[in-house]
Length: 225
Image 1: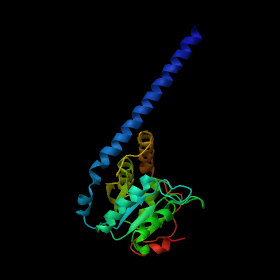
Image 2: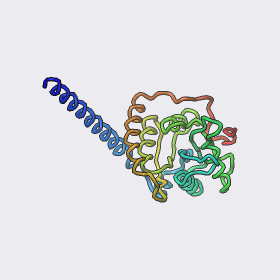
Image 3: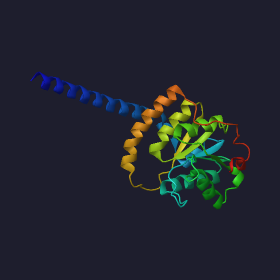
Image 4: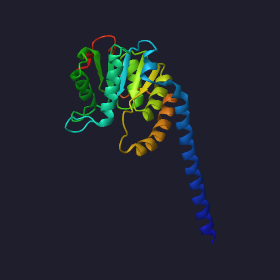
């Protein structure tokens, strides 16, 4: 009987800790959203903020045959529209290119160049392995100070929070041009991701790679490989 009471107590303690952790994650997620909600603008409002140094487009899934996912295409189309409207003279595409057989950034640049953007206006960040690292490297490597972030709204909160913590003057425009399969799962994962990046923004670790400065004011062809 005593063993059962001990086991019952342990189970309740574990359950209470799980609930506490869940509540903490939700609180941190809502804090990140509340802190950045006003920085998410319509295209018209973004254009009224004056010129940005660049439009930063975050990478996501590229298929093995080089095709880009619907979500990434919408990010690129939104960024392209802002560039054409004069929001910024340059575009910075940031994503995962840590392996030879997986390359988000070259696929992104090719998409933009095929639609008329001069190659020298498109910079590639080959080491944007996470949202935090993409924003950190935009400031530290590409010397961006004022930036317009483009991604889906669920992701923009976290990206803007990192930009604020790292000293960038940032605004965001949502690239939600359609509904996306699996979005509910993404929303749940994003709660964890916001909490993780909240901690990163407190600690401010260096990204995986830094390297020499490549000012976004120059030529994007310097980032070609």
